[in-house]
Length: 246
Image (cartoon, rainbow, N blue to C red; front, top):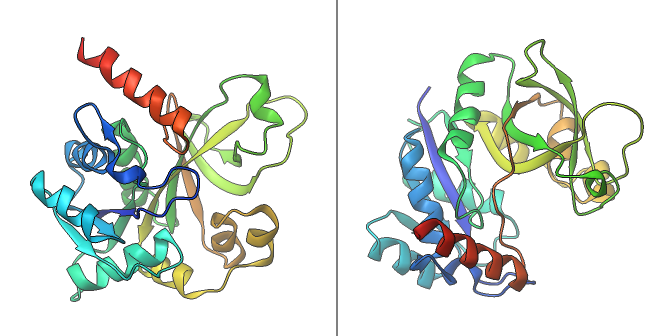
């Protein structure tokens, strides 16, 4: 397997405009994400940028970035266009899609996606979950829950469904982390399909993959990485960076 890591990013975020360029720990957030991806060592890394300012920031830090059409509607559209431009010959048979708002993502999380694709021949798409952080996760619509058929070791399993709804009964609740490892043909099939009924109902694009019949496998990690979506998240991330530097 020959994976590439692609990081979609654009400036026009609804809740936190210009967030890829927000300073965290002395560097733009997108640069911090690029650095974490490089540390994982799973393959070459590039930012699929919707804006020239993001390209400039990444290149100034020594990274690779490609400018994509700013009107593309989704991150998956952005990484497909970047993949076509960076690798038209199809040398990379797997793509790790890392969100551009996870400045402290552990390299082991990216490796977990790549390892699942390499280990499980039936896996079309690999992704990651972490344990719930508390009882409130079970009913929060902002927490995406993964329903899994876990393997005997409890470290990986097949995804049966994803939901924002409340989960009842005994057993763990798994928080989904929006990092994906795609086999290239699965990515292209997924991206070519229109939004599915369940995807529109739950506002979760991974349900499109399940409705297409693609198989999703999930790796279990210890904790979800910090994700920056709001001004409060940004303040918390900056505080975490200051604490780490001491």
